[in-house]
Length: 312
Ligand SMILES: [Zn+2]
Image 1 (cartoon, protein in one colour):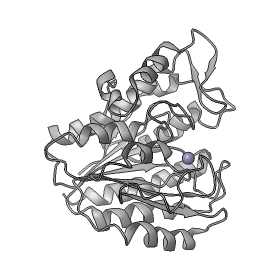
Image 2 (cartoon, rainbow, N blue to C red):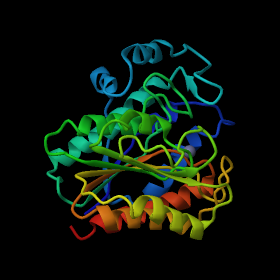
Image 3 (tube, rainbow, N blue to C red):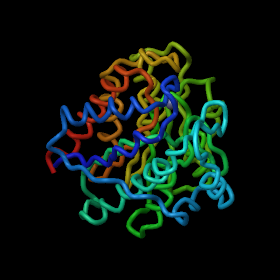
């Protein structure tokens, strides 16, 4: 079965300036890889998220402030890292809505209890966005908004979110730390931005943090990921999300973890081997700021997603 890609050139209109690490070129890199290697797969256009859907994670006043604060021209700073421009709003709405659409497509195509893979080539990333705070380049938490809406479906009892971006997904963890039906597991450089992600943060027993010291290499990463995420989680899931960031790659300029290309195949494969069974997967792009690190890491991640559902 083919991978279902949710993407749209609208993401080229979320302009953050050339010198910002989370810039338009990231989408072009991802798009060129997908066109080069996956042009025969399925392509779906994202839809805009509704206000009601956003309210499942974000506070009403915050959502209104975001929508009303879009500048007529130039850039707008939510914080020193998180930038919007006059043409950014549609990307915010499509990135969150497209992540929900992936789940709607799973229902529409009858993919529950089946291996199927969706990849959302969305920007900006979302895992740092809190209920009422834009941060870490993101405004709405794409994965959290999608998972919060998916868990409302009576056929979805348990969701697993695996976040291998090099930064801890503070927004996602905070969204679900009191929800026993959603497990959030993250490997990330620690101590590091955004500050959260200590191994002692366990939510209601549903949070699994795998902190990585600066300088961790491929071998150490694999050992720690198995120890803190793969081995201790022993549940069946109806839906798996990846917060797929490629900034733990050794070439990435924003962090100091030394993963090689193949680690992104390994991490995807080991998660799907243990938890995949007959389970749909939605992977949503988070970070990755080196051109080659993003392209090669994503290539390996997509290989594993494709192999996962190839035999369905
Ligand atoms: Zn990141």
